[in-house]
Image 1 (cartoon, one colour):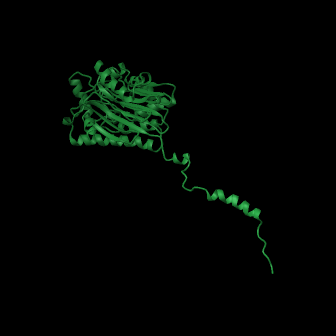
Image 2: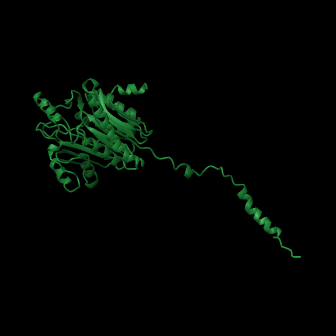
Image 3: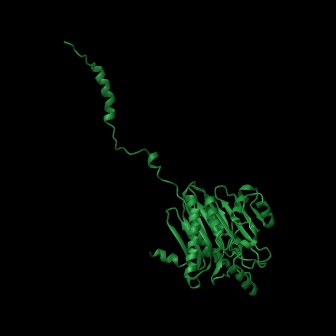
Amino acid sequence: MRYISLPSVGVFWMLGALLIPLIGCDDSAPPSSSSSDSSSEPPVALAIHGGAGTISPENMTDDQEAAYRNALNEALDAGYAVLDEGGSSIDAVEAAIVQMEDDSLFNAAHGAVFTNEDRVELDASIMDGATRNAGALTGVTTVRNPIRLARTIMTESPHVMMAGEGAEAFADGFDLERVENDYFYTERRLEAAQRARESSTSSLRLSEDGNQKLGTVGAVALDRDGNLAAGTSTGGMTNKQFGRVGDSPIIGAGTYADNATCAVSSTGHGEYFIRGVVAHDIAARMQHGGQSLTDAANAVVHDMLPDMGGTGGVISLDAEGTVAMPFNTSGMYRASVDASGERIVRIYGNEEEAASTE
Protein backbone atom coordinates (compact mmCIF):
# COMPACT_ATOMS: atom_id res chain seq x y z
CA MET A 1 0.00 0.00 0.00
CA ARG A 2 1.28 3.44 -0.93
CA TYR A 3 0.68 6.49 1.18
CA ILE A 4 0.40 10.09 0.02
CA SER A 5 2.24 12.47 2.25
CA LEU A 6 0.26 15.56 3.42
CA PRO A 7 1.67 19.02 3.96
CA SER A 8 2.77 19.78 7.43
CA VAL A 9 0.63 21.79 9.87
CA GLY A 10 3.08 24.67 9.49
CA VAL A 11 2.26 25.01 5.80
CA PHE A 12 -1.50 25.21 6.49
CA TRP A 13 -0.91 27.90 9.09
CA MET A 14 1.08 30.00 6.63
CA LEU A 15 -1.63 29.72 3.96
CA GLY A 16 -4.30 30.77 6.46
CA ALA A 17 -2.34 33.82 7.50
CA LEU A 18 -2.19 34.89 3.89
CA LEU A 19 -5.87 34.27 3.11
CA ILE A 20 -7.53 35.80 6.17
CA PRO A 21 -6.76 39.45 5.26
CA LEU A 22 -8.08 38.85 1.73
CA ILE A 23 -11.31 37.30 2.98
CA GLY A 24 -11.82 40.30 5.28
CA CYS A 25 -11.49 42.86 2.45
CA ASP A 26 -14.62 45.08 1.90
CA ASP A 27 -15.28 45.45 -1.84
CA SER A 28 -17.82 48.18 -1.12
CA ALA A 29 -15.28 50.62 0.31
CA PRO A 30 -15.45 54.13 -1.18
CA PRO A 31 -12.94 55.09 -3.88
CA SER A 32 -9.93 57.16 -3.03
CA SER A 33 -10.27 60.93 -2.85
CA SER A 34 -8.29 61.34 -6.05
CA SER A 35 -10.80 59.34 -8.08
CA SER A 36 -13.83 61.01 -6.48
CA ASP A 37 -12.55 64.46 -7.31
CA SER A 38 -11.66 63.70 -10.92
CA SER A 39 -15.14 64.51 -12.22
CA SER A 40 -15.19 68.05 -10.82
CA GLU A 41 -13.78 70.87 -12.93
CA PRO A 42 -13.12 74.52 -12.10
CA PRO A 43 -15.86 76.84 -13.33
CA VAL A 44 -15.75 78.94 -16.49
CA ALA A 45 -17.83 82.01 -17.27
CA LEU A 46 -18.28 84.57 -20.03
CA ALA A 47 -20.19 87.82 -20.52
CA ILE A 48 -20.47 90.01 -23.62
CA HIS A 49 -22.09 93.30 -24.59
CA GLY A 50 -22.96 95.08 -27.81
CA GLY A 51 -23.64 98.59 -26.54
CA ALA A 52 -26.04 100.41 -24.20
CA GLY A 53 -28.47 103.27 -24.64
CA THR A 54 -32.09 104.24 -25.11
CA ILE A 55 -33.05 100.90 -26.62
CA SER A 56 -36.77 100.21 -26.58
CA PRO A 57 -39.09 97.65 -28.19
CA GLU A 58 -41.14 100.47 -29.70
CA ASN A 59 -38.22 101.52 -31.88
CA MET A 60 -37.21 98.04 -33.00
CA THR A 61 -38.99 95.68 -35.37
CA ASP A 62 -39.39 92.01 -34.52
CA ASP A 63 -36.86 91.15 -37.24
CA GLN A 64 -34.31 93.62 -35.86
CA GLU A 65 -34.71 92.29 -32.33
CA ALA A 66 -34.35 88.72 -33.54
CA ALA A 67 -31.21 89.66 -35.47
CA TYR A 68 -29.60 91.21 -32.40
CA ARG A 69 -30.48 88.27 -30.17
CA ASN A 70 -29.08 85.86 -32.76
CA ALA A 71 -25.88 87.91 -33.06
CA LEU A 72 -25.43 87.92 -29.28
CA ASN A 73 -25.98 84.17 -29.14
CA GLU A 74 -23.39 83.59 -31.86
CA ALA A 75 -20.78 85.73 -30.10
CA LEU A 76 -21.49 84.03 -26.77
CA ASP A 77 -21.16 80.61 -28.42
CA ALA A 78 -17.85 81.58 -30.05
CA GLY A 79 -16.28 82.63 -26.77
CA TYR A 80 -17.79 79.94 -24.56
CA ALA A 81 -16.68 77.14 -26.89
CA VAL A 82 -13.08 78.18 -26.22
CA LEU A 83 -13.57 78.02 -22.46
CA ASP A 84 -15.51 74.75 -22.57
CA GLU A 85 -12.64 73.11 -24.44
CA GLY A 86 -10.13 74.27 -21.82
CA GLY A 87 -8.91 77.35 -23.69
CA SER A 88 -7.68 80.54 -22.08
CA SER A 89 -9.77 83.54 -21.07
CA ILE A 90 -7.76 85.73 -23.47
CA ASP A 91 -8.59 83.39 -26.36
CA ALA A 92 -12.27 83.42 -25.37
CA VAL A 93 -12.43 87.22 -25.19
CA GLU A 94 -10.78 87.52 -28.59
CA ALA A 95 -13.10 84.93 -30.17
CA ALA A 96 -16.26 86.59 -28.87
CA ILE A 97 -15.19 90.09 -29.92
CA VAL A 98 -14.01 89.00 -33.38
CA GLN A 99 -17.48 87.53 -33.94
CA MET A 100 -19.03 90.93 -33.11
CA GLU A 101 -16.44 92.89 -35.08
CA ASP A 102 -17.39 90.88 -38.16
CA ASP A 103 -21.12 91.50 -37.63
CA SER A 104 -22.39 94.75 -39.16
CA LEU A 105 -25.05 95.13 -36.44
CA PHE A 106 -22.46 96.41 -33.98
CA ASN A 107 -20.36 99.57 -33.85
CA ALA A 108 -17.03 97.79 -34.11
CA ALA A 109 -14.96 97.10 -37.26
CA HIS A 110 -17.39 96.01 -40.02
CA GLY A 111 -20.43 98.18 -39.32
CA ALA A 112 -18.61 100.85 -37.31
CA VAL A 113 -19.74 104.48 -37.35
CA PHE A 114 -18.25 107.20 -39.57
CA THR A 115 -16.13 110.15 -38.58
CA ASN A 116 -16.78 113.73 -39.73
CA GLU A 117 -14.53 112.92 -42.72
CA ASP A 118 -16.67 109.95 -43.85
CA ARG A 119 -14.22 107.27 -42.90
CA VAL A 120 -14.02 104.68 -40.14
CA GLU A 121 -11.47 104.90 -37.31
CA LEU A 122 -11.28 102.04 -34.84
CA ASP A 123 -10.23 101.65 -31.19
CA ALA A 124 -9.71 98.50 -29.11
CA SER A 125 -8.05 97.18 -25.97
CA ILE A 126 -7.47 93.88 -24.18
CA MET A 127 -6.10 92.96 -20.75
CA ASP A 128 -4.84 89.74 -19.15
CA GLY A 129 -5.90 89.41 -15.51
CA ALA A 130 -3.13 86.92 -14.68
CA THR A 131 -0.28 89.27 -15.58
CA ARG A 132 -2.09 92.61 -15.84
CA ASN A 133 -0.42 92.99 -19.22
CA ALA A 134 -2.47 94.93 -21.74
CA GLY A 135 -2.59 96.11 -25.34
CA ALA A 136 -4.56 98.91 -26.97
CA LEU A 137 -4.87 100.94 -30.16
CA THR A 138 -6.69 103.99 -31.43
CA GLY A 139 -7.40 105.53 -34.83
CA VAL A 140 -6.73 102.39 -36.88
CA THR A 141 -8.30 102.29 -40.36
CA THR A 142 -7.12 99.14 -42.18
CA VAL A 143 -6.94 96.24 -39.67
CA ARG A 144 -9.96 93.97 -40.10
CA ASN A 145 -10.10 92.89 -36.45
CA PRO A 146 -8.70 95.53 -34.09
CA ILE A 147 -8.99 93.26 -31.04
CA ARG A 148 -6.42 90.96 -32.63
CA LEU A 149 -4.04 93.87 -33.10
CA ALA A 150 -4.59 94.91 -29.48
CA ARG A 151 -3.63 91.42 -28.36
CA THR A 152 -0.55 91.45 -30.60
CA ILE A 153 0.54 94.77 -29.09
CA MET A 154 0.14 93.19 -25.65
CA THR A 155 2.11 90.04 -26.39
CA GLU A 156 4.64 91.14 -29.01
CA SER A 157 5.70 94.62 -27.91
CA PRO A 158 6.89 96.35 -24.74
CA HIS A 159 4.15 98.97 -25.15
CA VAL A 160 0.51 99.20 -24.10
CA MET A 161 -1.01 101.61 -26.64
CA MET A 162 -0.28 102.49 -30.26
CA ALA A 163 -2.07 104.98 -32.49
CA GLY A 164 -3.01 105.48 -36.13
CA GLU A 165 -0.35 104.89 -38.76
CA GLY A 166 2.15 103.73 -36.14
CA ALA A 167 -0.18 100.96 -34.98
CA GLU A 168 -0.73 99.91 -38.59
CA ALA A 169 3.00 99.91 -39.29
CA PHE A 170 3.43 97.63 -36.29
CA ALA A 171 0.65 95.39 -37.67
CA ASP A 172 2.64 94.99 -40.91
CA GLY A 173 5.05 92.71 -39.07
CA PHE A 174 2.39 90.17 -38.12
CA ASP A 175 -0.19 87.92 -39.72
CA LEU A 176 -3.11 90.30 -39.23
CA GLU A 177 -5.66 90.64 -42.01
CA ARG A 178 -5.69 94.07 -43.66
CA VAL A 179 -8.57 95.61 -45.59
CA GLU A 180 -9.48 98.81 -47.37
CA ASN A 181 -11.37 101.28 -45.22
CA ASP A 182 -14.54 100.79 -47.24
CA TYR A 183 -14.72 97.20 -45.94
CA PHE A 184 -16.09 98.69 -42.72
CA TYR A 185 -18.79 100.79 -44.46
CA THR A 186 -22.51 100.21 -44.15
CA GLU A 187 -25.18 102.44 -45.64
CA ARG A 188 -27.08 102.90 -42.40
CA ARG A 189 -23.97 104.15 -40.58
CA LEU A 190 -23.21 106.59 -43.39
CA GLU A 191 -26.76 107.94 -43.21
CA ALA A 192 -26.43 108.33 -39.44
CA ALA A 193 -23.25 110.38 -39.90
CA GLN A 194 -24.93 112.57 -42.50
CA ARG A 195 -27.84 113.24 -40.14
CA ALA A 196 -25.40 114.12 -37.37
CA ARG A 197 -23.61 116.61 -39.64
CA GLU A 198 -26.89 118.22 -40.62
CA SER A 199 -27.61 118.82 -36.95
CA SER A 200 -23.99 119.90 -36.34
CA THR A 201 -23.48 117.32 -33.59
CA SER A 202 -21.06 114.62 -32.70
CA SER A 203 -23.43 111.93 -31.52
CA LEU A 204 -22.93 108.97 -29.30
CA ARG A 205 -26.65 108.50 -29.30
CA LEU A 206 -27.78 108.85 -32.90
CA SER A 207 -28.72 105.48 -34.33
CA GLU A 208 -30.02 104.30 -37.67
CA ASP A 209 -33.07 102.59 -36.14
CA GLY A 210 -34.36 105.43 -33.96
CA ASN A 211 -32.83 104.00 -30.80
CA GLN A 212 -30.18 106.01 -29.00
CA LYS A 213 -27.36 103.50 -28.70
CA LEU A 214 -23.91 103.96 -27.20
CA GLY A 215 -22.07 101.61 -29.52
CA THR A 216 -19.23 99.40 -28.35
CA VAL A 217 -18.65 95.65 -28.07
CA GLY A 218 -16.86 93.87 -25.27
CA ALA A 219 -16.25 90.58 -23.48
CA VAL A 220 -15.00 89.34 -20.10
CA ALA A 221 -14.05 85.73 -19.38
CA LEU A 222 -12.92 83.33 -16.64
CA ASP A 223 -11.08 80.16 -17.67
CA ARG A 224 -10.48 76.82 -15.93
CA ASP A 225 -7.10 78.02 -14.65
CA GLY A 226 -8.83 80.81 -12.76
CA ASN A 227 -7.56 83.55 -15.06
CA LEU A 228 -9.68 86.57 -15.98
CA ALA A 229 -9.49 88.66 -19.15
CA ALA A 230 -11.35 91.60 -20.66
CA GLY A 231 -11.54 93.28 -24.05
CA THR A 232 -13.40 96.12 -25.77
CA SER A 233 -13.67 97.28 -29.40
CA THR A 234 -15.48 100.21 -31.04
CA GLY A 235 -15.83 102.62 -33.92
CA GLY A 236 -16.33 105.41 -31.41
CA MET A 237 -18.65 108.38 -31.78
CA THR A 238 -20.70 109.10 -34.89
CA ASN A 239 -19.36 112.19 -36.71
CA LYS A 240 -16.38 112.45 -34.35
CA GLN A 241 -13.75 115.09 -35.10
CA PHE A 242 -10.22 116.15 -34.20
CA GLY A 243 -8.96 112.62 -33.51
CA ARG A 244 -11.37 112.16 -30.60
CA VAL A 245 -10.59 109.10 -28.45
CA GLY A 246 -13.14 107.55 -26.10
CA ASP A 247 -12.80 105.14 -23.21
CA SER A 248 -12.68 101.85 -25.15
CA PRO A 249 -8.90 101.81 -25.71
CA ILE A 250 -8.12 103.26 -22.29
CA ILE A 251 -6.98 100.65 -19.77
CA GLY A 252 -8.78 101.30 -16.50
CA ALA A 253 -11.65 103.19 -18.13
CA GLY A 254 -13.03 100.98 -20.90
CA THR A 255 -11.19 97.74 -20.07
CA TYR A 256 -9.63 96.23 -16.95
CA ALA A 257 -8.76 92.76 -15.65
CA ASP A 258 -7.02 91.53 -12.50
CA ASN A 259 -7.29 87.99 -11.16
CA ALA A 260 -7.39 89.41 -7.63
CA THR A 261 -10.66 91.23 -8.29
CA CYS A 262 -12.54 91.22 -11.59
CA ALA A 263 -12.66 91.76 -15.33
CA VAL A 264 -14.65 94.69 -16.75
CA SER A 265 -15.64 96.02 -20.19
CA SER A 266 -17.49 99.33 -20.43
CA THR A 267 -19.95 100.84 -22.87
CA GLY A 268 -21.30 104.36 -22.71
CA HIS A 269 -20.46 108.04 -22.98
CA GLY A 270 -16.70 107.62 -23.07
CA GLU A 271 -15.66 110.97 -21.66
CA TYR A 272 -17.41 110.18 -18.36
CA PHE A 273 -15.97 106.67 -18.23
CA ILE A 274 -12.48 108.12 -18.66
CA ARG A 275 -13.00 110.77 -15.99
CA GLY A 276 -14.46 108.19 -13.61
CA VAL A 277 -11.85 105.51 -14.42
CA VAL A 278 -14.90 103.27 -14.36
CA ALA A 279 -13.45 99.81 -15.01
CA HIS A 280 -10.65 100.20 -12.47
CA ASP A 281 -12.93 101.85 -9.92
CA ILE A 282 -15.03 98.69 -9.75
CA ALA A 283 -11.90 96.63 -9.08
CA ALA A 284 -10.64 99.16 -6.50
CA ARG A 285 -13.93 99.06 -4.59
CA MET A 286 -13.56 95.28 -4.37
CA GLN A 287 -9.89 95.30 -3.39
CA HIS A 288 -9.79 98.24 -1.00
CA GLY A 289 -13.42 98.58 0.08
CA GLY A 290 -14.28 94.91 0.46
CA GLN A 291 -17.33 95.21 -1.78
CA SER A 292 -18.70 92.31 -3.79
CA LEU A 293 -18.57 92.52 -7.56
CA THR A 294 -22.29 93.19 -7.77
CA ASP A 295 -22.21 95.96 -5.15
CA ALA A 296 -19.13 97.61 -6.68
CA ALA A 297 -20.48 97.55 -10.24
CA ASN A 298 -23.88 98.86 -9.16
CA ALA A 299 -22.34 101.68 -7.12
CA VAL A 300 -20.26 102.87 -10.05
CA VAL A 301 -22.95 102.58 -12.73
CA HIS A 302 -25.99 103.69 -10.71
CA ASP A 303 -24.43 106.23 -8.33
CA MET A 304 -21.06 107.59 -9.42
CA LEU A 305 -21.71 107.84 -13.17
CA PRO A 306 -25.12 109.56 -12.95
CA ASP A 307 -23.72 112.02 -10.42
CA MET A 308 -21.23 113.05 -13.11
CA GLY A 309 -23.86 113.07 -15.87
CA GLY A 310 -22.64 109.85 -17.48
CA THR A 311 -24.76 107.14 -19.10
CA GLY A 312 -23.96 103.57 -20.08
CA GLY A 313 -23.16 100.26 -18.47
CA VAL A 314 -20.57 97.55 -17.87
CA ILE A 315 -20.19 93.81 -18.03
CA SER A 316 -18.08 92.38 -15.21
CA LEU A 317 -16.95 89.03 -13.88
CA ASP A 318 -15.12 87.93 -10.73
CA ALA A 319 -12.85 84.98 -9.95
CA GLU A 320 -15.79 82.84 -8.77
CA GLY A 321 -17.63 83.30 -12.05
CA THR A 322 -20.17 85.80 -10.73
CA VAL A 323 -21.54 88.02 -13.51
CA ALA A 324 -22.74 91.61 -13.00
CA MET A 325 -24.06 93.64 -15.95
CA PRO A 326 -25.59 96.89 -14.63
CA PHE A 327 -26.56 99.82 -16.87
CA ASN A 328 -28.30 103.14 -16.25
CA THR A 329 -29.92 103.39 -19.68
CA SER A 330 -33.16 101.73 -20.79
CA GLY A 331 -31.32 98.90 -22.49
CA MET A 332 -28.00 97.17 -23.17
CA TYR A 333 -27.28 94.39 -25.64
CA ARG A 334 -25.84 91.73 -23.34
CA ALA A 335 -25.43 87.99 -22.84
CA SER A 336 -23.65 85.71 -20.40
CA VAL A 337 -23.02 82.22 -19.08
CA ASP A 338 -22.09 82.26 -15.40
CA ALA A 339 -20.21 79.68 -13.30
CA SER A 340 -23.41 77.69 -12.71
CA GLY A 341 -24.01 77.43 -16.45
CA GLU A 342 -26.99 79.78 -16.47
CA ARG A 343 -27.27 81.44 -19.86
CA ILE A 344 -29.03 84.73 -20.55
CA VAL A 345 -29.42 86.87 -23.67
CA ARG A 346 -31.15 90.23 -23.12
CA ILE A 347 -31.65 93.64 -24.66
CA TYR A 348 -34.10 95.69 -22.61
CA GLY A 349 -33.95 96.76 -18.99
CA ASN A 350 -37.34 95.37 -18.06
CA GLU A 351 -36.20 91.87 -18.99
CA GLU A 352 -34.44 91.72 -15.61
CA GLU A 353 -37.78 92.11 -13.80
CA ALA A 354 -39.50 89.61 -16.08
CA ALA A 355 -36.79 87.01 -15.42
CA SER A 356 -37.02 87.49 -11.64
CA THR A 357 -40.74 86.63 -11.67
CA GLU A 358 -40.42 83.48 -13.75
